[in-house]
Each structure stands twice: as structure tokens, then as C-alpha cells.
Length: 567
Image (cartoon, rainbow, N blue to C red; front, side, top):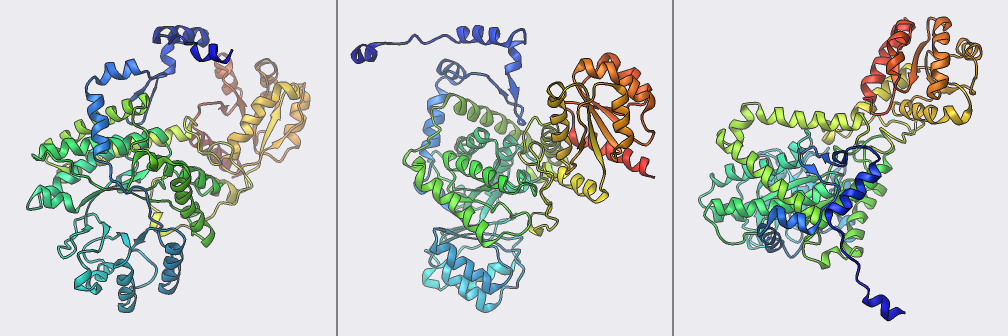
């Protein structure tokens, strides 16, 4: 029988067959409801097949895969553990510990809480002579750059590292130090999407290439820096797309060789939240795996509590995320592990097309500086940010522990790490409103109508809705009559109450409840009731709570009304 099983061949269904089955399963919903758009404007298909990919890319598919693989460096995903310390002594203690425990790249943000002394710089120079590094500085006058004055002449040629700076840094005596960076993390933290980041990276490269004596000299100093967000496949495609774009970019400068440009990456902090901070660990692990599969050369995993103040434990966990992924997934045994995936190859091609078009638009406007000065760059990044904000506030994107499954007992940490205070995080509005609501000690409640079974779904939804800003509503026992409902309303301390019940129970009781409710209690109804909405609002109903609603806008409105009532 086993031999027969080996000889069985299953017929490969056609896309049209799958489509017919999907339409049947949708039960009247349009097939187009399975399509979705990314923040980059790319339409995602419900199914990707070999046929659809070949039809879309044709001969370009083989060229895309070959380009990505030919531009992949041999040493990828080096662990770049950032040092967090308040004193020089603590800095070197942590640095030594990280190197002993698997850190491969000395990673420093120059905005430290201590001054670099001559002794400190001399000591740091000894590490730079032995290990590769990544330093982030503000400008050419940064005190940290003095470390290079303390490196012996006979070691300057072998020193390897990366300097992340807004403007290129001149270090001609150090041929293996890359000091010209297209740092897209600054745009990422303002809200830029993947296509914008790719286009800005090319635009910065065009600007800096023209400042060098030759493209070859420029390419030896250049690297790109990305932040990797939680959109797993998007970020893999972003890293792969850059290699294809770089090939086209270098060809435009008349270069036909495969020039490998390092990709420095880090976990995105715009996806982090101060609420339920251990979820940040899950986010960063997901992001790091994207970076690993996408082919990042250096990767920094930020500790899960980095928005406030990292601890020895959180720093160790962050480092171990990289080490475990690197050593135990076996991803590094495969060149371009995402290569050949119908979905990722298609998405990579879409990003290449859209990013190249935006890059040409920027160049036509006079380059990245002119484009920025015109306000177009800020405008498009803001649009992308507001779109991302809306998807979080309407729960189209889940921020576990923040906009869904929030724990109202979770203490919001008020301390903020100044290095990351200005990042436009999608969780920030929830944190701010929670702080205000908690300080005001607002009393809220849920009035359940009908039976426990009929009222529980909406009551649970409302509780989760209010939990996102730290509110713990008082819940009534299910009531079957308007008299019992009014009795509970008049006894509760809650000044904002949401009525939760089945459609039939709600329609039967709400009008009577509104006619005699306490004047100082704001009442909403859970669900959508288009036919009754106008009449209920006239009778004194405040509004409605329902799925797909903007949580922040709704609760800000409720908060303002509650403060008015309290006055």
C-alpha cells in the first residue's frame, strides 16, 4: 500500500477553481473583499501562484533573484548589541560583558549621559582596534569621533566599522570604516512606509555619490541603515528590494560590477509600547527574524523596556534574541531564504517599482534636499503616519496589550528614555489617554440587558474597548426590565455607562431607560442601530460603541463629556 501511495499524483487545481471555492465560502460577499492594501499602496492578493508570478514578472523574476543573491554579503546578521550606561565605568563594564556573551559589533549611540574623557577615548580606541563597531553620532563635531585620534597608525587600515550620521564623515585614513550612510531610520521613526524608506535611501545615495571623486570611492564608504517593523513579509521584501534598487542605481552611474553594500538594521521602536512591555519582546523577535531572512548584515535588537530604561536582564534578553535566531534557526545556511516565494518575490518587485518611481520624482524635483525643503517629503511621511495611526486606533492592526487585550491593571511607566522620546509611536495616543483617564479616576460601567448569554459578547467587547485606556467598568448583572435597569443606573457610581445587549433586548428597553435615566450619567449603546439612532440621540443617548470605530477619538469625546458633567 505504501508503494501505491508513493505513485499517487494529485491534480494541481487552477486558480479559477480556487476562486470558485472561495466565492462559495464567502456566502455572498464579493471576491474583492479578500484583497487588501498595504500602507505602501500595494494591493495584496488572497493567493499567489507560480503562474501569477511568472505572468507578472516574466524574465525579470530570474534577474531579480540573481541580483539579490549576487549582492548578498557572506557574513550576515552580525550581533550589534547597543551599550546602555549612565557612567563611563558602567559603559565599559557592560561593553566587556556583551562581548564576552556573544556581541560581535560594538554599538554606541553618542548621546550618552556622561562625557568622553581622554582616558575613556583611549580605552575605547583599544576596543575599536580589535572589534568592528557601529556608532551613531549627531554631526562631525561629535566628541565621540575623537576616538579615532587615539588609534595607532599601523592599525588604521584594519579598523572596521560603521558611522551613522546625517552628513558624511571624512575619515580617509581609515579605508575600512564606512562613514557615508543613508540612514532611513529617521524617516521610519516619523512614520515613513517601506517604499518611502527605499526611495529616500536612493536619494541620499545620489546626493552623497555626487560629492565624492568617483562612484567607486563613494561605494567603498557607503552603507544603508533600516529600522525593521512588525510587518513581517513587508520588511523581508524591503531589505531584498534595496539590493535590486542598488543594482539599478549603480548601473545608472555606469557601473556594471556587483558592488555589495552593507545593510545595517535594527528593531523598530515605533512599534513599541510602554504598556505590557513584554509584548515588545515578541515584536522585536519577529522583526529580528525578518532582518535575518531579509539579509541584514548587522542587526541591533533593542531591549523591550528601552522606551524607559533598560536593565541588565532586558539587555541580555535582547542580545539572546539575536543569538538564538542566528544559531538555532539555520537560516544562515541558505542564501536568500525568501527567494522563490511567490508572495515575497511579487512584493519585492512591487516595492522596487514604486520606490524607483518615487526616487525619480525626488531627483526631478532637484534631489533630496530640494524635495525636503519643498515640504513634499514631510507631507507624504505624515500621510503615511496618520494612516498607520488610524489602522491602530480602529484595530485594523493589533497592538497586543495596547489596543486589544489590554490589561487595565498594568502600570504605565512615566519615565521616558530621552533618546527615543520623539519617535512617532502608534501606541503613544493610548498611553497618553490612559494617563489622563487614570489621573481623573473616571467611573465607568456596563449595563447588561437580557440574559448572560445574550449580553456577554457585547459586554466583553465594551470592557476590552475601555480597558485600552485603563478603565475598569463596573458590570451589572443582566437585567430583563427597564425598571431594573434604571434601578442599577441610579445606584451606580459610574458617570459613563454603556448598554450592552442583543439587538432585540436593546431595541425593547433603551427608549424607556433614556426617558428616566439620571441626568448626570452619560449613556452609550453597544452596537449599530441605524433605524433607531436618530430617535435615541434626541431622547438623550450620547452615542454608540462598535467594532471598527476609532477608539481614541471615541474615548476622547467621552472623556470631554465626563469632565463637563463633573463640573
